[in-house]
Image 1 (spheres, one colour):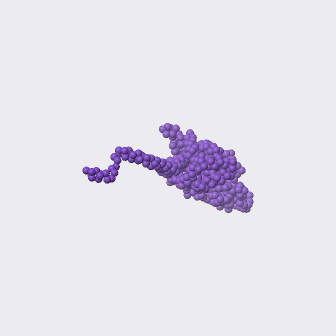
Image 2: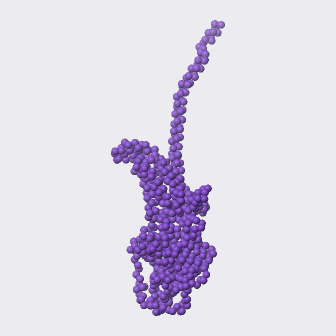
Image 3: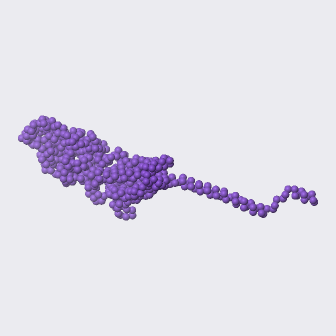
Length: 589
């Protein structure tokens, strides 16, 4: 198998993974079969109680309870993080406005309200008794007369008292200024003179948080088998879970409305109807005459921010889940936040994180580029072999493998390092896609020297598609630097890959595109360095060869020149005198 086929398969696989993640977002651990989740435990208590126990004629008079119902009115709880509006009739939540999160990047945009008027149809944070909505059928009063304003570090409590049939319900909600958690203690009192059994239920309801296809709203819950998510198509027929439930809520990538019970023996009912998500946590209870029981839980309504979820009970922090490679995405997001502490810009933090990843994988990339460079040098030989044995594919493959063995080249050497890095790339992709920290986080808020808004929201697409086009250009440049495939069909497919990635990434959040663009630029720099490092020894060898050739030519030419000079000197020189001539002349004298 040739390196180009492997590289093509790797890149296409990565493209398929990214596209699949868009069309079918990865679910957490596999869901259990519906049949198992819908099995209910025997209700022995209900079978033991006779219908006469609910006879309305045996209800204790209201006067004995010293209970005076009042007409429902709004009461507000204002903290530095949110403003919540409750109705005194049953403690139903009418609004929950997050002060630190706006609907758009416009400074004048309204703040996000997690509870809309459509939610009120199901009474979010309301209680049911035997599936009867107490905020409609019951009578309620409220101890607090004024709105609550909390300063940092403060906490205050609202007390709702209600009566439905012969059951008295006292709800105490405690609000803390520095968290999105609301603690609640419910006391249920049987005012009848007979035994009573019933089911208490706590409601949470919300429509879809946003229409972003990359950020779907869904029901999430955590039980003894771990985290599970259910989208609307799985909820139309209803869902029931009875398996040591830890928490349940309506969630997306950024926000959630959750109920965290203290009692593990509660069951979950969830559904989707009329474009509205609803969950209900229920528990069967049995009361002796005049007895009471307490039921405690907390609510978390707000962003999926680890700073506020740390230390929450019942593994609520595990609601931050990044998909298949969550175990890799979690530490990567920690490093991203670490950089943000110093640069105060998530775009710059993404660039630094990309650089760190590239440094970590430098040895593997070095090996990959080295193998690609070796394959590039063998490309002419491979072309000759293909032409020679084009009619005998078996012989052609044998000759190619023999060539690899002769020159000690591993055709997979350039692909294996890339395969190792793919999980990290996907993990970072999922982490950046699902982090509330990147929502409305700016990188370069305006095009330089203009007032045109550009990358002012890393969770939204590039409004001018500049970064996706640059990313495609860098991919094309990388291809030009790599050895060309021997197969013309493969070469054409590789040329189209940048266009495919531009099409996929053009609507991606800018933070994701920024990461891929930065990674491509660093890869180009590393590839150029590797190619230059590989060519330098060859250039030096060629220079040395040229120098030796020049020296040899000079040496070959020097004897002729010396002979010519010697002959000219001999012409000028007088002839040498013969020995003894001078003595003969002296004797004659």
